[in-house]
Image 1: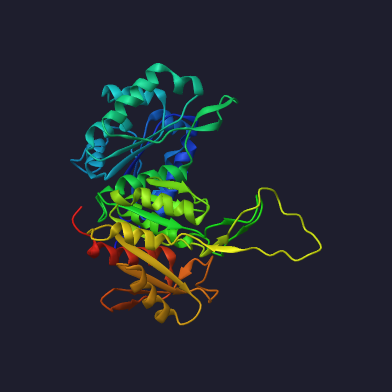
Image 2: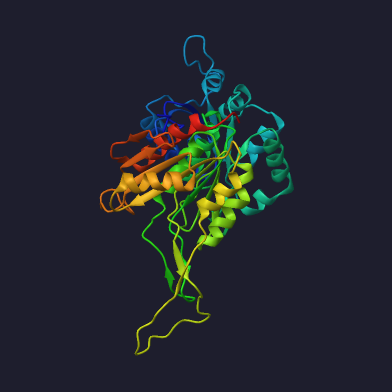
Length: 406
């Protein structure tokens, strides 16, 4: 199975500068360590006045570097050794002063000298007052660093150290870590691939407030999109359910089966793999009421019409083409394998993932799944009950051999 986390056992340098937001860097370090990274913290003297180096050392179990002439070993200069070993360099928070020095190539502290000494990708998370962030000089320096290939984690809007509220607040530590994962994933086994994943259950309107839907939570589709991102793919997620934001995942929100069909077909010519994990409704009201239907004294009858068959339309477009690889899901409550085999053939799929949604421990909304992978040549592979993220990686392990060259 491919790596489930691009941070696992990776060497990360974390640069901390003298912003009042320096205390949030402790949370960044903690999250990196919890996800398996080896973290070397370098600090400016100003940062050390705001947060004790011991806080970082207690979390990372590694020495914190403040003195750029400090020898980590008998012959190793700190900033050179850390910069050379780093697989990614995260600077969070980055003050306007430090950003200016970085843009000009100045190096007079551990944070800036490490930046010059490393060839690793750099993730920069600014934090400062709104006027400082918007200042033309700061914006010019940020643009210069971006042009060099640095990844800039834009500051958020919120309460600032001055007591004011505005743009310049350090991005959430979890988002900084997620951006770092995305940067490190660039070398994964899906690097250069473009994939589309659908997620959630479609909602077919009865009137402006009611709809026909299903119990799909979207969790399997979300896991598939995140797993693909973590393996280096360029990912578009088409979903009816609002997902947790993920760096490197483009989200397209839809509601109805027709909207999902249109979104899929628009992207299809330019993707390597389509995974239809969404639970697309088979029927929709033939005509939705323009206004809310009021409760009356009689029963309400709704005429249903067939919705677009997204996979059938995909098969028609794909006919004769070598790609994309198309993967479908079969959520069944009885005769799982028999029904899944029929769907595999009927839809002309390259791979089908079958699961029994009648079980509460692996059904809709569960964090676990128990699936069988079915191939057109008659093979099928049964996976044990696993967390959905592990199922997602197992599915990508099966898809990659089916894909042609990038």
